[in-house]
Length: 406
Ligand SMILES: Cc1ncc(C[n+]2csc(CCOP(=O)(O)OP(=O)(O)O)c2C)c(N)n1
Ligand SMILES: [Mg+2]
Image (cartoon, rainbow, N blue to C red; front, side, top):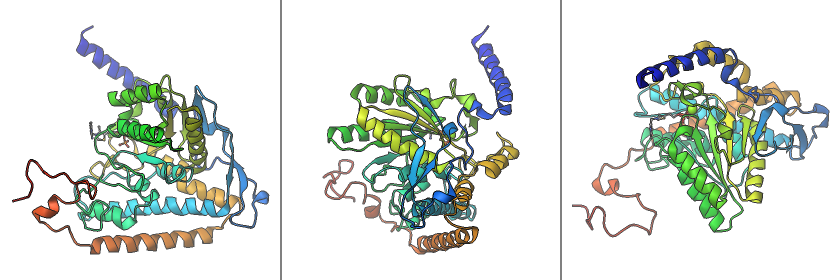
């Protein structure tokens, strides 16, 4: 068979597989239902700060060369409400960005993570501020969870001075305390994350780095180079694949010869996690951090999740998947609705209380957006163009062989 023909027949085989697989979406081994963690309303204490135990569903995890985490998780009422509030805030800020883009106030690129909120929120709730996170362009929720203000995120998208990069970076240029972006080159953040984790080990820090990438990026050569070095040097990098089922318009099954991304490290232990259940994510991240530090090893984690919108604002997101598929995930697996159901079932708060919390979040985000819109554009001067490139005090003497800008 000619090479071109073999490629063509491999493609049609791919299409056949896709058809078969669409019956059992993605051949998933973990559940992706959102409200699978169980709790006992009678055991929930009155005191909002008193811990009680809930149990993550045993279908939430699939492990490779390691054990699955223990399923018991201690939470408090206040923590559950904070997680709910955070997921709602992330979604609101992304929907605000969606509106501003459609109003042509945000130009260029804009990648939203609506549907994937449980990953950012569950992760932040499991780790310390001193742990590090680096990710791709789909970064607004993570930036917010790392402490970047909504006005700084939206302001950056709008190109305003109040933006986190002073309005000079725009989309993808989001950084914060122990948050290293916001990276537009697919996969490039993975070796950078390995470097951050190397520094943590070198400095004897009791911390890890979550180096995040997508199912599409998982096929990049540099990802495997980073795996190799991390394993050789025993560095605490947690390679974190957010499998949202698509890389632009290509399904994971079409792009990846092997879609068990948590096994892609081959010689590195891995864990597949239900990325739609924020409590399963939280439990997993704590376990992975402890495991990586105790065993001085990198790990690979795969969060199985879903993006509701297109790849970016210019992609309607419905040419390579059906509207029914999106609707079905929204209706049955939404991470925010899932946590809401659990909060109500366990008697942590009722529907009215949650509604007023949502209202407060909406008002807060609206105020932040107004502040971003009120901020001026950066001054269009040459000096300003060359300002803020280096950390203060580390500026080189020469910019492109010049000492001053003429
Ligand atoms: C090196 C490189 N190649 C191609 C692109 C164009 N591109 C941007 S995003 C993307 C798909 C990535 O998909 P995935 O890793 O699944 O992440 P997701 O967008 O789903 O979060 C591609 C091919 C790029 N930005 N960089
Ligand atoms: Mg993807």
